[in-house]
Each structure stands twice: as structure tokens, then as C-alpha cells.
Length: 225
Image 1 (cartoon, helix red, strand yellow):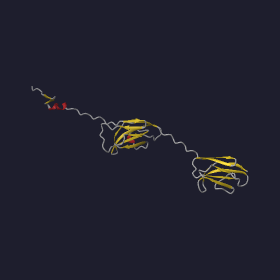
Image 2 (image 1 turned 90 degrees about the vertical axis):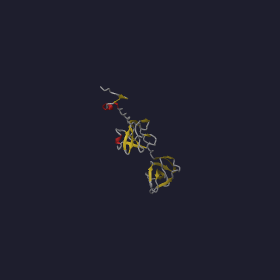
Image 3 (image 1 turned 180 degrees about the vertical axis):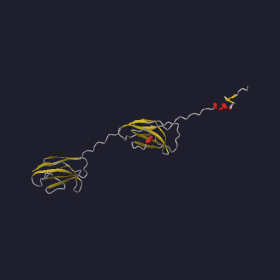
Image 4 (image 1 turned 30 degrees about the horizontal axis):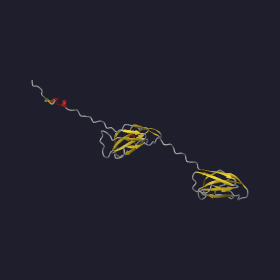
């Protein structure tokens, strides 16, 4: 009987040679870690993944982001970031206040080759702007003087019209009298009884140039001696 000889654990019998081969080591799966700090998303450089020079990072986020593959969805926002840029971005709400889901990925020649796990961030929509102040002209009488207060912008000034006609207008009619006040002039006019003593009606118009008017005050009744 011929003895079997082993050298470094390898038998001379070739049929047993494969039993001594070292199994290959599996490479770990690529990892792209993401973080949320308030409304800022940041990410690390991918681990176990070889970035190519032209690869770019992309952020997808939306209220119902089930997969970054739906990047063409109008309910999903997307932003691109070069490798030499800072690996963080501020997320802004675009679909009201609530929870948004965000994913960071790597794009290579337009194809998504790596993506992070989805991460949730609460984004609060800014409050609506306050309503614009209502432009108006308030008037009051002090003896035979009309005083007016304007709320809002009236860059071309005012036209004060008074008359014995119950509804003064501008452009004036026969029997009406008007007096212009610039935007920086005193907001008062002493009313003259140009058509004799008696009861006059007065109101203030926003002047828009030529014979155009805008905002109009209420009509006041003044008794002029």
C-alpha cells in the first residue's frame, strides 16, 4: 500500500486539490449614509462604492416619495450637487406643512447607480404674508375745514371737490369746485362758499393724473356761512 503524502495540507491527489482553495471574500454592499438636522439634509461620501469623476449627487424629496425612480413626478423636487460642493442642502416645503421623505443618490450619466435609505423630515410652510392694507381715505369736518387721512400709497395726490350738488364728482360739473392737494401737502382744505352761503357736499378723490380718479372718500355735508 502506497502511503498518501501531504505537503502543506495539499494532497498529491489532484482530485482533492479543490478542497484546499480559499473561498472569495464578498465585498460589502455600498452605503450612502444620510442625516437630518432640522430642515437640512447632509450625507457622507459613499462607502464601498467607487465614485467616478463625473458622478453627481442628487436629492429627491416629496410628500409621497416611495422611490427615487419617480423623479419626473411633479410632486417630487430634485436638486443636483457636484462632488466638490458641500454635502448638505436645506429642504424647503413645496406642498404645505407636513412630513416629507428624502433620498440622496448618485447619478452617473443620467442613471441612478446608488441611493440612500429614505429619511423623513418635517417641513413647515412659512406663514402667508399679511394682507395688504386697505387703501382708503377718511374725512372729517372741523368747522368749515375738511381734514382727511389717507391709508396706503397715493403718489399723485388728491382732489378735494365740494358743491351744492349732493354728489360731487371729478372732473367737476357746473357748480362744483375742486382743489388739488399733492401727496406731501397738508391734508386739509378750508371750504369757501363760492356759490353763496348754505349747505355744501364735499368729498376727497385719489388723483391719478389727467381727469382720472381712484379711491373716493365718503361724502360729508358742510354748512358754510
